[in-house]
Length: 155
Image (cartoon, rainbow, N blue to C red; front, side, top):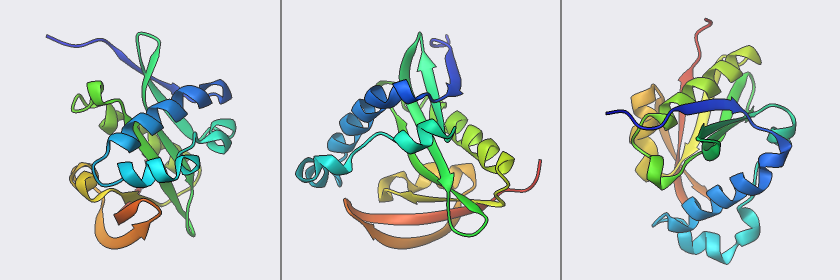
């Protein structure tokens, strides 16, 4: 039995409020980051600039945004996954993988030869399963994190 169809589409500026709500709900529910997010609610925001420049891909189910990924220019010739969020009710169904595939495609089209992400420690396995590696511990506003990288071979 399959679930409802998931459609990926470019993000639009009018998605900002919905994406901010999704980001907020997932961030405050995160065991390692929730308290820090509640203490700094202004730090949890929608990717408004990326929505304007085509750097957001939204996953929809029956017209409802259930996830998104943000791709921005990173260091040197690498792009950065600046956020990957999937509604808790839709996790573990392949939406995150599809969003990462779309992020990699977007980064390649923009000329990036690599992709970088700063991940919560408990999400590292998700990124490693996709092909990210070379973990490096770091610290973010919300707590400990891990930087991961992957090469983007030309298509």
